Image (tube, rainbow, N blue to C red):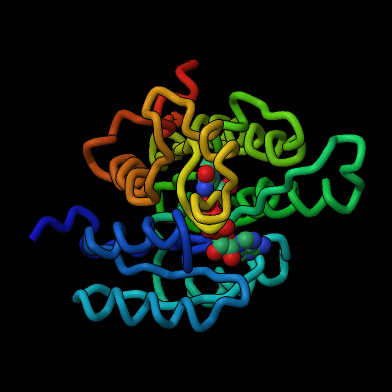
Length: 250
Ligand SMILES: NC(=O)c1ccc[n+]([C@@H]2O[C@H](COP(=O)([O-])OP(=O)(O)OC[C@H]3O[C@@H](n4cnc5c(N)ncnc54)[C@H](O)[C@@H]3O)[C@@H](O)[C@H]2O)c1
C-alpha cells in the first residue's frame, strides 16, 4: 500500500464538500488520520467519516466557524488534546460576486474574515504547536483570482491575494523546520462554482483557458498531496497553479 502520510495527523478546514472533501479523501488515502472541520454540516461530515473508515482510513469530524476566534481555539484545543498535529490544510472559503460600489462593510468583513482571517487564525494556532515540536507542513488554498483579479469579485480577490502573501511570509518565518506552501486553483467544478448551476455563457467563459474545461476537485487534491509529500521537500512558500493554464505568472 502506498501510504506516504502514514502515522501523520492532518486537519482540513471546510472538508465536507468540493475541494476540501477531495483533499480529505486524498490525505486519508495516503494514510493520514484526518480531522474534518465543518461549518454546521454535521451530517455531511459524519458521512465522510464513514466513507473514509469504510475504506480503511481514520477520520474525525470537528465543527468550527473559521471566522470565529473562539470556535477556532476550541477546535485546536480538541485536536491537540488528542495528540500532535502534523499537517494543516486551510481550504474553507466563501465567494462573493458583487459590484465593488455595492460591497459594503459587512460584505468586506465577512469575506476577509473567512477567506483570509480563517487562514490567519488556523495558521497561528497550528504554528505555535508545530514550532514547539520543530516540524509540520501547511498548505493554504488560495485562488487564481488572487493573481488575476476579476471584476465584481474585489473582496474575494483581495482575500486570496492576502493568502498568497501570508503563505510567503510564514514560509520564510518558519523555514526550514516547517514547510508552508499553497495551491491557487483555477475554476473547479464544486458547489461553489458548479457546472450544473452555471449559465452557458458563464461556463464558456470559465472554460476559456488553455485546458478548455473546469478542473476537478481531485486535481487540486493531487497538488496538495504533492506539497505535503517528502517529494516536495525543497518547496517553501510556493503557490502551485493547478489552474488549467489560466495564470502562468511567477
Ligand atoms: N471552486 C473553484 O473554482 C475554486 C477556485 C479557486 C479557489 N477555490 C477555493 O477552494 C476552496 C474550496 O472551495 P470549493 O470550490 O470546494 O467551495 P465549496 O463552497 O464547495 O466548499 C467550501 C467549504 O468551506 C466551508 N466553509 C465556508 N465558510 C466556512 C467557515 N466560516 N468555517 C468553516 N468552514 C467554512 C463550507 O461549509 C464548504 O464545506 C475555497 O477556499 C475556495 O475559495 C475554489
